[in-house]
Length: 121
Length: 223
Image (tube, rainbow over all chains, first blue to last red; front, side, top):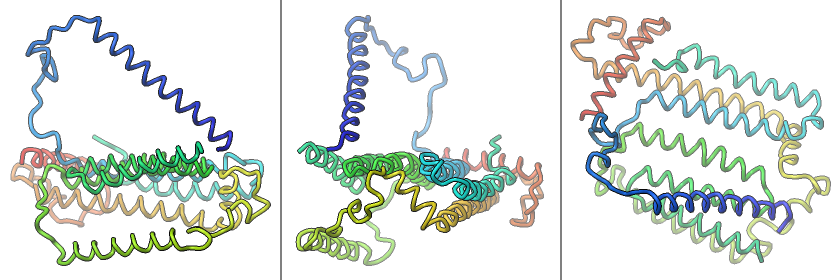
């Protein structure tokens, strides 16, 4: 196991300590606080409108475009990272290539923008 | 030794997730199990010192791709109960059984009987002495800006085409939705009646389309 991988162990321990800390304090709160549940308190929205219908409702098709735009810029970011990590090694060629890459992707964004996809309302 | 422990843990995560994807009744649960599997694969990448790949696996696959899957599942309507007894395409299940068994047999043969291991004898780093000492993100960057510079730009074009296709498809589907669910009360929108006749994007068109989509989604919720 490399040293670099070993450093992930620190990340894992850090995460476990974080989860344990939240658990300990939530548990402490549960022990210490008064607990008198009644019907009104257990409602999802106290003194609000009762939720009706099934929670598995069909989503609007318009959300899909946002998800796809998100994927597009996610992938764009993935390609930018190797370039940004060794910026000096790729010099002007890398800069021009990345500029072309981002420009082509911008065309898609501008198209979506002009078609009014980004506007909600 | 520690690598074996990490491998076994991530293998269990991957396999449990994969079984969950197949066995879940609810497609949303399948998508969530898929996240578990992809996270486990990211762990496997970490063992192979492919740190950038592991990060990409989490960011793109577990983040974006599964979100896209979930959106498609929600769009198709998870509220509708599926009749699993009916086979829409005949012989599909038998074919799946045969293909699955063949892939399993092929995998066992490849892993068990190959001389140099499934991926060949030479490790990737020994093959190219120049790459020694570079992290995987630097190696990916090097091939991205030398050998695969053209493919890299083509990827941008591919992504742009995907976005344009999605925009076009969702717009046309929305218009059909509006036409199908058009109620007598909203018939005073003459621009909507001929489908495809209003290709120019006027603000009025956009507004009426939105209100129509609202109506149709309300109708779906009630049914």
